[in-house]
Length: 294
Image (cartoon, rainbow, N blue to C red; front, side, top):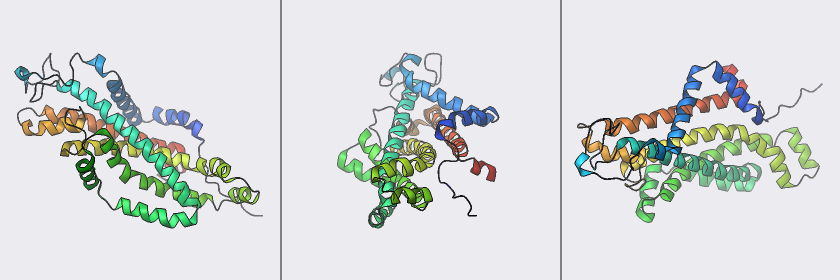
């Protein structure tokens, strides 16, 4: 008697992930803390206008380089702008950039990964293109894009998405190549299942779990990349409040007021760390076999 065929379907149904996450979080204080911190960051980004009475763009030369006080909780920068307010609005900027970059990377990676994994002729062509894209450093690409198109949100998103989505393509391609050898897929092909239906019902569901996990790490990576590009002066325009811009503006006055870099830096570190911790839990929740191997 032949052993049952191994299925590539997610070990845990995607709709059951929230319940599994809650069970894991109940016994893991680090996950609970990470989710709480990330929730606070999202709340700060959404309700930034309500959490501060200042504008992130207000300039006041008479209050420049002030230490933390009751009026300015995190102090002020060299133009007299309230650092606390700019950090709150910086959370909005960074999270929007991260989410949009992650969604675009996943969407592009899924489309090209399906084409490369299912069509052998396209596989050889697309994967060589992906290898070429991955060989270009993101910083060099960002500098070139800024020189051509100027510093803007669109330029930053392109500079983040282009190096990220080839990794998603490779991930999806591997899943599709394995799924094609499964008996249920071969049976569907032999029965004449139309290609769109075959991809939608038998191929794409196998990619959902790894894409959710990969998306969480792309989100963290995109936030870090945007901060790094802005810090180097090749990211968002200087007037846009982002954590990278705040640290870039404050590096000349760091010795006078360390909070210029410390406060946005701690917000950035906590956000990225929380996302990575939640991503690890997502990976275990979507594939419990990985958790058992630990």
